Image (cartoon, rainbow, N blue to C red; front, side):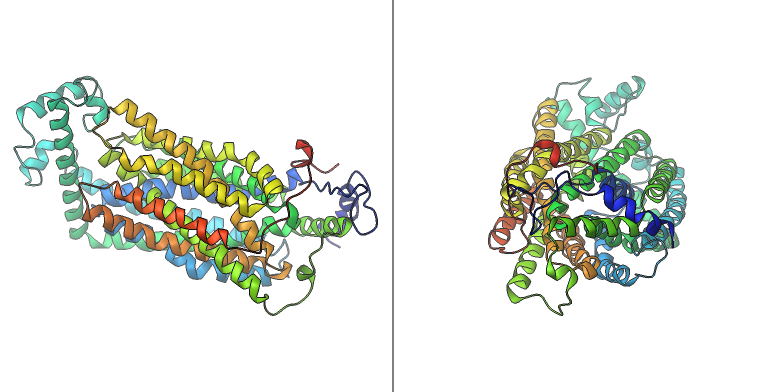
Length: 555
């Protein structure tokens, strides 16, 4: 008998509720007091925490690498940014289903994939960034940060680098500030003044010249970008190999009525991982042109620490057995969880399709905005790179603030109504972004833009936390991984397509790039319709409880 099974009897005893259930599985008084095992969920969340550490850095830094170091335009880098999502369409259901069948794995059917996938991602990520550094060195050898060099090489028009601009550049540089940041300019001339506008126009030309020079380096050295993309593909396959298994582990160890609360806690841990990564790239990727080796080596170390924490705390087989004991003790075992059904009833199939359509649409809208946020905010709104990191931090903070209300709302109102509220909040928050531009004073612009993303983060996490539990609510215990894969097919299909479409919109409307927010808002708003007609997958709103009962630990 292995260690997990030896400890099972004692652990099941500890999992019993405060008051024994009456006949039929319901406690006296008709009030269910099931508690979410905080520690168990927290431990399982270490895997998702590591995943989000990677994706937060990837989503922020990869467009900048492809745009600045390789000189790709928005459509081109949007296509590459969609690769992970395109691969995920096929790989996530495959690996999710494969993990469902890995019942003979020594340490649990999900744990094996989590270990192998994380280690593979770390190794190939280091290879990828070493290759990127070769391209970076070639670009920097040409002195790409010098306007005069770009003028001499024919990339920048001499009239753009005129005496007034040159004088202001030298003043900013002498003050130890970044002359390629519009924030630095505002320290010397008033925002909105002709000189300020002239310098802003110069920066647009300067950046375009840098991209053109980098693009020529890429064309002259095609092997570098081919090697970079090959290594990137291996990273993405490694990440895809354990994403579905890692997410499926939460419903594996959590009774169905508690999955919204558990997903809220898992999302909080993912947010913490994302926050750690935002801090990393804010500190280690501050310059417009710099090596990213230190950033990715540090990221690899953080992911390794998260994997170690997971392995030290999670005993998958024991956790799954305890979950079934808890459901049995409380009489909440779904017959579909233990019975063998070849198909879902037609009504539930329709609901599953509508839930997945909701997932598709909200990711379609949100990822269109997020995948171009770093370039939009720096190139169009003229924010410096560091401030974009602050926006992401506060956006994550909005999500974190939402987590406890989400847990409460889902239990009291049901998941469906809670999602509808989240859609309304996100749409209302993003609408003002359509009307923001760099003609607004920078301080006011930053406050308004950040406030919009803070509130939008609150709404989006409400949608995100509740859609996955609605999908797994329709699954059986034997195929949770496959249904988790369906969820990610919907989300990743959207994320594979939308960066390219959004990039094309930005390219086609260089003077009206805020259309990206019109596009995003319309897609997110469409979620309201699909969720409104969903009939299954919701949880039944529970009777009034004390706050501590939502996140109690085992006694």
